[in-house]
Length: 322
Image 1 (cartoon, rainbow, N blue to C red):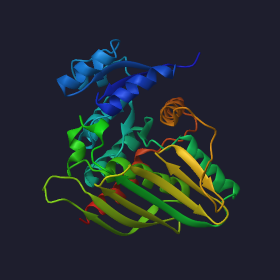
Image 2: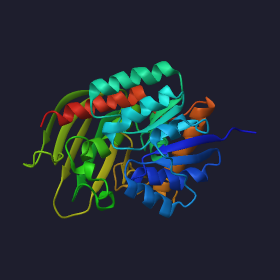
Image 3: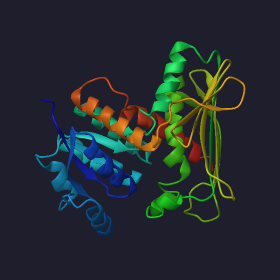
Image 4: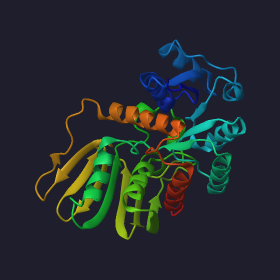
C-alpha cells in the first residue's frame, strides 16, 4: 500500500487556503494541521474547513512526529524562517514562490536545504500545467520550427487584484509587487523551456509613495541564446493581461490567463488543448500529483530551491533598477 504523506500547512491566507481545498483530493496527502500568525486568518480557515486542526504554534506543528512535509505559504520575507525550521526537524519542504526577497538569505537557505538531503521543491504554478507540458512537447518534437524567442506581457488594472485584498503586503515594495508575484512564474517557464536566463537589460518604475510596489517593468533576457522580453504595468481601465508567447517559424504557442493554451500557424489564435472546465483547478491538482512523486523519490516536474533562487536573482535585479 502506498504511503500517505502528512502535511503541515504554514500560512492560512489565500494560497494556503487553496492548498486546504485541494490537498484532500490527492488521496496520498493528508493535512494534519495548519497555523498562521494572524488569529483572523486562523479563524477564517476553520470556518471554511471545520476539519482543520489549528496548532498552538508553527514550531509545534513542524516538529510533530505526525508531520512528514511542511508546506510554507506565508509572505516571502518569512519563507526562510519556516523552511529552516522544517529542515531542522528533518521534514520535507514545499515552499511558495518567490523563494524570498533577500538574495543572501535565499542563497544560504538553498545551501541548507540541499545539504539536508530531504525532498524539497518550490511551488511554481506552471511546472506541471498542461499548457506548459504541451510547450515542452512541441519543443522536443520540433513542430514549432526555428525559435525566434518568447514574450511575457502583463497588465493589471489594479494591484493587488481584488481577490488578493486580504494580503496587504502584496501592495508593498518590500516583498510584494506583480513582478515577484506573477512574472516569477513566467520567467521560470522561460528558464524551463529555453534554458537558464541571463538578464541583458531592465528598468522598473515606482510610484511616489515610498513603500508602494512597482507599476511598470521592462526587461530583456537571454535564455539559452534566445531573446525573452518582459513588459508589465499596472493602472488604467481595461481587462487584465497575463500572456506568455513562444514564437516559432512554423507554429507559435501562447498561454493566456496562466493556463489556457493557444496556437497559431500564422493566422488567428486557436485553442490548442481539449476544453477543460476549470484549467486552474486542473493545474493545482496536477501540481499535487507531482508533489507526491517528489516525496516518493520518483521523477517529477517540480522546480527545486536552486532553480527558484536563479529566478529570484533575475527578479530582484529587475526591481533594483527602479
